[in-house]
Length: 119
Length: 108
Image (cartoon, rainbow over all chains, first blue to last red; front, side, top):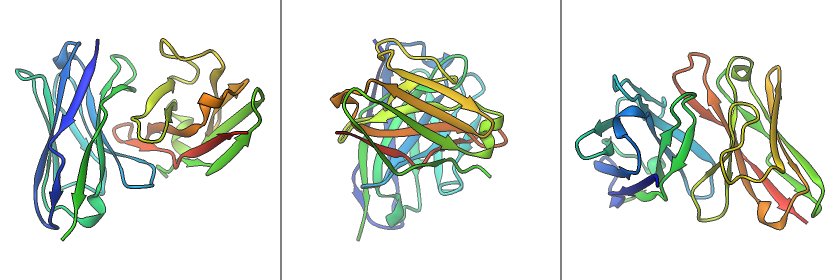
C-alpha cells in the first residue's frame, strides 16, 4: 500500500525557516516523481514544487522560487521541502504527492502538515 | 497564459447530471486531471489523461476535452459527491503544474 506522511509543520515568524518532510512507503521511491502542493485557509490548491524521479530535476512555482528547495533522499525514501524567507502568505496546509509512472499525474497524496507564518 | 479557469460553484439535484469545466490555453497541449476534495481531507484523483478513472472511482465520473477546455461530468450525482473539484494541468513549457481555481459542487 502506498503511503505518504508529511511532518514538520509549525508556527514560525516571518522571515524564518522550516523543513517539511514526507516519509513514503509502498513503492520504489527512486522511480517516481514527487510534488508539494499547498492550500491556504479557505482557498484553492496551489502547486508549489516538483522533483523528477531519476535525474532529480526540480521545478518551482514563481511564488516560492528562490526561497523554497525541494529534495529527495532515496536511502530514507523521504521527500523534503526546505522553506526559507517565510512570508505570512505561505501559511497553508502542505501536501506531498506521488506522480504516476507515465503521465506525471499526482495519484497518491499525504494528509498534509500545517504551516503558519505569523508574528 | 498558464491560468486554468473554473466556475466557482454549481449545484445539482440528487441523481441528476452535472458538468464542471476547466478552461485554459495549456489544455490545447496537455491533458487535465481532476481531483475531488472534501472538507478537512486531502485531494483524491478521480480522472486522469482526459477520461481514465483510478481504481475505486465510480463510473459515474467521466472526463472529456475539446480545444482549450476540459470537463468533468458526474452522471447520477450522489450525496457523497458534494465536494470541491479541481482540474490540474501544466503550463506551456510542460514543466510546471497548474491547478484550476476550483468548483464547489452542491448536491441538492
